[in-house]
Length: 105
Length: 388
Image (cartoon, rainbow over all chains, first blue to last red; front, side, top):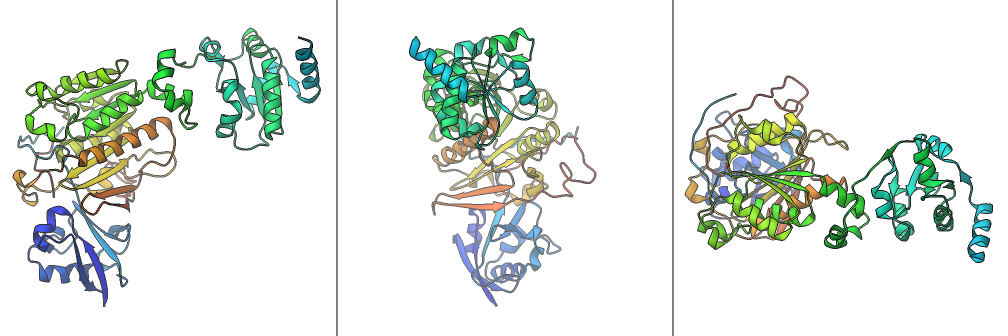
């Protein structure tokens, strides 16, 4: 079992008790995230879809490499590895708007 | 006079002279032609594709233009005298293949060889941008590039404020601002282009007032409208760089898709509370294959994956960091210097005071910039809140 440090982005910190870095164990990225998910309910659901695949608007990095460019969730984790969770962030002014349109051109 | 003539006669013994026809021929085969005349002389015309280094800065700047001391260098002035002195200086500096062009620019022009009139700075510009002119990577040529460039700012808010402020100060010639919002007092915690007395006025008008007060020469074109699939092509046409300072996914994806379609570098910044992200999405970057925003995040998150708008918020100083990084990337791209954040995502954590650089790979299956089937059709996404 490798021990990794998982860096939690601000939007997901309410799901990790406010921690911005959490230690977790596993042989692969998927195992590390699952182990974290088993301790923090709701966490995995924000990263993985119903089929257990990475959501398209979240990226998981092992070191500085996107796991999509490696072996995905099967990427092997070395002891001491740092895993980043990088969500899409829209903000530029600090609050969103709520107009809606659906037109496609 | 006698001393000068004696010195010139000695130089003619050591520095080979060539005529303008030979200079043109050598230039077309890769020799570097250096025009050492003064800016007011160059304003009236200079050989096409010549490097222009005023004589007083020749030794200081030549290595930026010609790093290889063995490369052929052709030195030109107006008539062929100053170029002899200048060529001698280069020879002493260590350049081994230096020529003086006899007859100088006057002969070049009389022979009908190709001439161009480069943008020459006015005395006021030289005073204002003096601290740029002394940087070899900018110099007069780089400053002229900035003055001739057009940057479009999507949003005149938290990110757009510092980015536009510094780009106007740097002398970007034309800035196009797009924002349909009006100044609200709650903006003033971070949106430094605006002022308390302008609360209630359109942000683009407020931004223009601040930018032109800083640098009256900057042309500021404003559009108090929302960027949509219907107007994006027209607004982005002819722009050198787009700075994305938007606040919603719908606009970010539209900015990305239009920049990919039109081949414009997209300088991206986004912020949330204490966290920021910066990158340059530019598939057409000449040095390496760059990704687009959709290579990193193929689709925006669904609304149910975004927390309520009330949960968002941002430390007021944070857009200062991220917007300023966007301005730096923009200036680098306009000048063609350094290594832009193409294929690299800078993630900033203000609480830890830590920057982390992550790789962003080009996705061969990307629907916008991939190697397979692509689409250029724009999508007006239904907007959702600030974060996945």
